[in-house]
Length: 127
Ligand SMILES: [Zn+2]
Figure 1 (cartoon, rainbow, N blue to C red):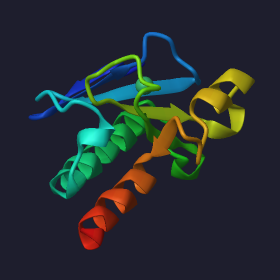
Figure 2: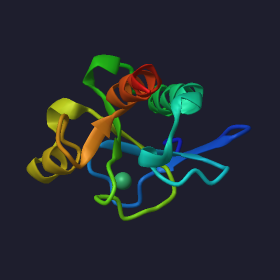
Figure 3: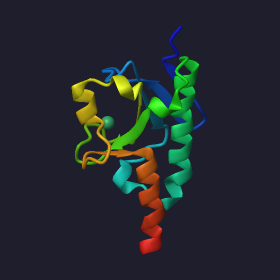
């Protein structure tokens, strides 16, 4: 049976209502966080937790090829929801044209979780 919802102490994880892939989940912190532009270096552990939760719901739904997943955030203003949410999509190898555009790596509207963590790490080093 499909696991469509998981709740953690400080996160919830649920299936996207408009799935862009066979597996498409959103991970959302319970506490309001704004968007990924307002995140600071202190939020790196939170982003890491969100990624873990994303992998977890995939595994619970029997999707185990972690090389074939994409996790990331929409970069403001290309984000219709102002509450921070991580997109978790799989399998990436089967994404349709539209999803490949909407969740495109290295675009100015989508940032992968890994890239975001890297940016947050560099942010403090620069200032
Ligand atoms: Zn989004």
